[in-house]
Length: 614
Image (cartoon, rainbow, N blue to C red; front, side, top):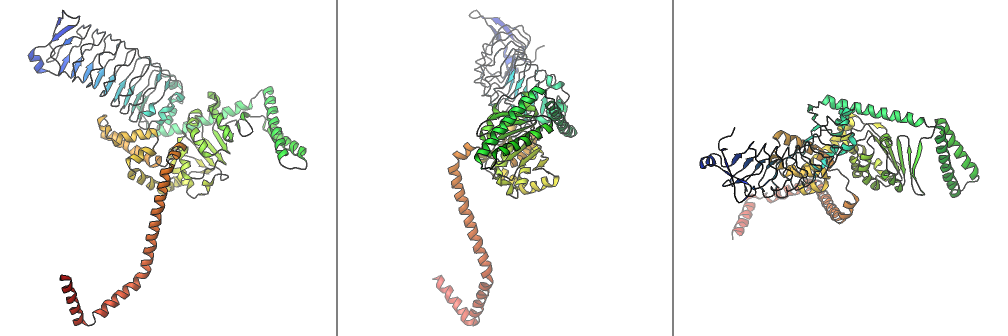
């Protein structure tokens, strides 16, 4: 069945192997911008004579093996080559006006020849033989990408797709997903029927600020009993999972179930650690006692003691007695030197000294890393800990408690760096060696800035609803003013990369061009605004501090000058308030005395006016 204007005649060309397509003048006049060549048994793209005005061209369900004879179609916006025998994407590089390209159900093995198609809005490559995502970074206006039914094993190379709102990767061989957090507008991600076995391979989804629809059914990870709860905890703003709407009750139950699962894992790990064979226990005990002896003797040599041998034996006897009473030694030394110590004690990882941070880079087994729920830092400067927080977030998925002792946390902005951790239930910052604890607002600032963690305890004190309300009152208004009044260029400097891209997208008004509805734009803007007020309270990296030190010094001098000026103005105002009653009385008295002799006063006023007129 052909539509109006689709009647076409094909004839052989003696000078080439391509057929020539003709349309009558009436058909061209009836539909000059559209041509449908569906199911014509074509093995080659015909020469389209006199059809330079075409905007829509349909070659569905043919036998075409190569794309030819289209370079003269400068106005073509829609090209459909679905269900053909095409093996290469050559022949389309000249179609700079193309907005929709449909190449599904072909034999394409590699994504290429898209360099000039910068206006592309929809790209459909499903049902091909593509094994890698590549050559797409320049498509900044691409909104929909369909790569379902291919041979892709890893999701990457997504940088630059700033307008992408939907990506379909169903029925591939995907086991790892990365860089999704670098797509500021991504709303729908379809990963059904792949080979994803763990949420560790989906860690980047938790960093996406706009994703609200996700499908993972048909993956091994979806067969787990805790699958739905883990998915909702991984992507907090999710509205639909596996094509089903997520309710607030399900979201709440997911958090509760996740906590229970964590507690079960920790309990089972404790029991497993207590069931240690006899020989390894004796070996680890002897090593640990040797370490104690070594350090105690060292201390005895340094500190004067009348009976150092007695001190050494007493300490060793006391420690060994406690270990034997406990029923075993769960302590595992990870790294040891004269300047640092890293040890794993059951669920707790303790790091002493700057060099102990190297233990975070070692190869951690999945079970061992999953068992760590507490990390304690001691004698390490907090600024040295900050760069390791993103790695901690990925490496220890069940981490719920951080402890800082003697880490020199001295300013409120430093606390904002903890937002880089995925989640926390408890935070401990000991007053010893951390001056920030002496500040009256440190706890409120921590509750406000880490609101998304839903902290349960800070320094062993429960975080109540009243604490949250008080923190919001103290810092919420300040955050709102900062988010609304800070210049755009300054916002882009302050924000982290994922929120920076999302903010830039909304500020440039590209949401409407990407096809977002007014409701979606409003929701995204609201979510971004709520996050901005907190995200602006961030802690810049040491490189940033170094490069901007001179600017900060100038800003500090300027602010000091403004503060001094305001202080001087305030002093003048207070002095005026004190002197004003006496000044006012003198002014009134002078006026009364001057007007006492009315004729003389009138004459003096007339003389003054006459003098001014001259």
